Length: 146
Image (tube, rainbow, N blue to C red; front, side, top):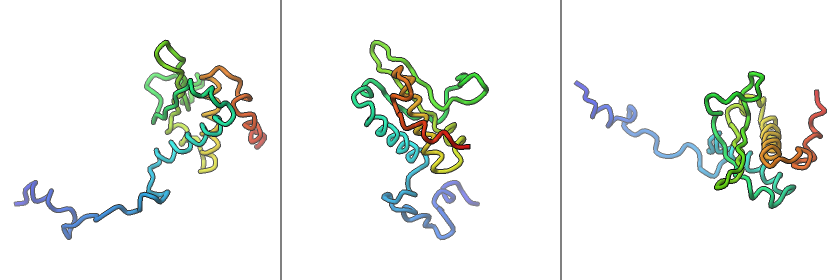
């Protein structure tokens, strides 16, 4: 009879299991999709920061997996890619980017990078009540495609 203790002691048929990480931590493939997405948001924020400077000090940015339940989004049946929360007396304005909806709309790596930048620019503009052209004047260049 095999007990649960015997099953827990066996990791594979040789009794060893994995001896270490499959990839060294310094390789890009070792990062999770969530960590890679966080990096894309940080890159987009650094681009916006070069344009706006200290205005971003009053904005907190976060990444969430999905929008909260009951979030109506755009009102057209689409899931929201981000949400903004206005500043209150004890908290600064907040931008929350939703990772899964953004990734599901992107068709490739370059498309995902562009979409993250567009979402961050639009979210910063909405959160700080600024025109999108002021946040990223180069953003309209890539919109002339098909």
